[in-house]
Length: 42
Image 1 (cartoon, helix red, strand yellow):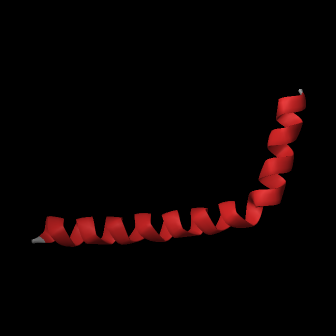
Image 2: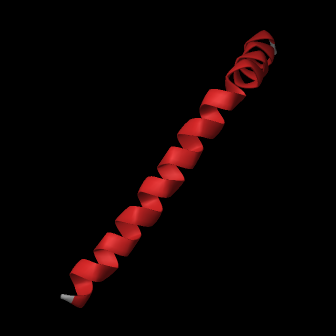
């Protein structure tokens, strides 16, 4: 229970960094998908 509370506090404190990482991963995944489609077309 204590570890769960610590995890929640950690996520709450780092939510901005996590959001930034998620956005960067989403952009990278979208770019990778577009590049893969272009390569597949060639």
